[in-house]
Length: 363
Ligand code: SF4
Image 1: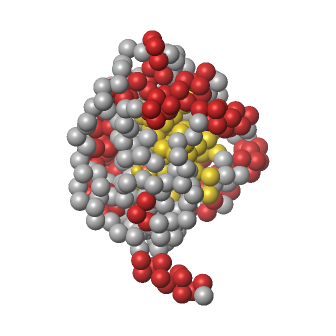
Image 2 (image 1 turned 90 degrees about the vertical axis):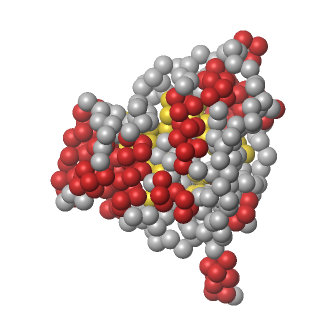
């Protein structure tokens, strides 16, 4: 039975167990609900990069941090199709398309994204989008186009979230997830560790995710990749033991969810990744880039799969393929809504001091 009323003390007790016991318990839960030798492989494609008005302290795509990423306007549908073909040929069953937007706005760009969703769904790949905040009507339009999953991360606990992002509230995140739940699209939501949060914050994030009913179908657990110019660029790297504990605890608290080993894999050894798979990670992002941060090469991943005897999960193994409706057949039309997403005052500033120190060190 899935438990939706986890308490912080219960989660902390799990997280702090002696590691061997924790690993054994998580692996046992994992085997009960999943095939331990199957791992879902997704490719993350940035369809619109940089210039984002939000101030997420970890993100090089936020316009205000002046990082070195190359900005790009919204991709064409044919470009997305070519990238999807490549991803499928290299073993990915899902394409996750990310746009650096605060929220989805009805209009030409959204119509183009809907066409991308129809196109990739017709290629028999699971399609996921991460486009910022969405209304219920927009989520239903994505569902009609054939979207399989929508990603919207909670990032951290409600308390710590305010220290990392100030241009929108935690409730906006939860409202977007609820809007997605009103459609047939599955929910992908997780967070990031290594942003300076406490273990209690990690537990509270897991409470927020696990009290959702149903719990998210997938949960990415990211390790912060500090990027120069962002406010979090001086954070210490996450230790492998923290990652193993976090994945194992997530697996126990959300037994049916696909737990995704996401950003930060380049810093992990193959043995470290194997431990994460053992304790319940059963999804990865493939491709040499995760939106803008580095990720292991696809062929490296396939070598690791071979060494560990893992096989990639087939598309639609855990849910039916959506039927894409054409624009003309769609029941849900653009409403031109002006949703009332919160806009708290911006407070998170880029790390000027760190930038200066690094510049000096380079001279
Ligand atoms: S994480 Fe998303 S919303 Fe936040 S700054 Fe980056 S692109 Fe924008």
